[in-house]
Image 1 (cartoon, rainbow, N blue to C red):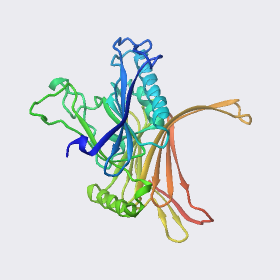
Image 2 (cartoon, rainbow, N blue to C red):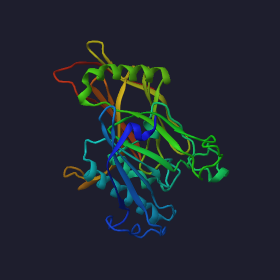
Image 3 (cartoon, helix red, strand yellow):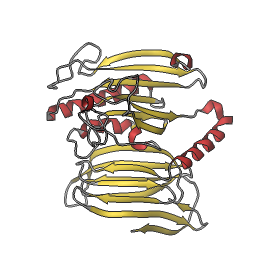
Image 4 (tube, helix red, strand yellow):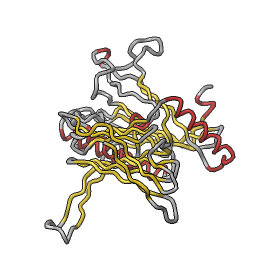
Length: 338
């Protein structure tokens, strides 16, 4: 089926990545003096009648510290513009060459922080994914080289299933660009088709279970030195390591309730949310008048009515279970098995 047969264009537009997004202009004080813009489409799925938005962009490429700051300003601008254009409840996808990877060794990774405040990363959250380099330099960089995954798909109000870096010849040529294509299959559900909703969710649950034994998430500290690998499968486990060594081997966490229900075992994730926080908290009873609270957060929302929140600081990590259930419940056992 041709794309135009499946989707119709409802609206479209663009804005410049600069202090004056409504007129052609260059990105602030970047050493990359190319004009940069973001193009967006509002599409309607003719079959489901679901609207969604797609944004594509190309952020400045230079490596100077000022360019990292400018890329972050571009990302914040895209967030703010799409909040106005699409609204907070819309399904939105942002794609493009961001000229920064999320790998801890990439000094440009801070450029992506604003995206994580309103979006999530398809590469990190998809049920099946890879960590291949999307930059190939027309063959100079092999796909298994880390730190060169500069192209991204960020999403909001959708569910990523399969993310893939296409490192094989396509369209009859070996290199169609100095970057590999990246693709991601998403799904979404919507209120007007409630009679299909349960069947669809059951299908997704079965599909997920047959594809992989566990779903993995990576959480990195703000300074990039601490990394946790969080895996959801038969059990919920996490690790902790720094640049030199493993600090904590895979460890199981769970809560067992008095009625025998166990949170963490066989957990089905409905949605993963990421956020970077950097704020100052007043502390009148402490030796300091205020405390800086800076961390990266991952919240896994389970179908069973609870969430688990992980926070990664520069000097450690924390987690907590969050219940969305009403009434009184008695905990039998809270477990962390190291």
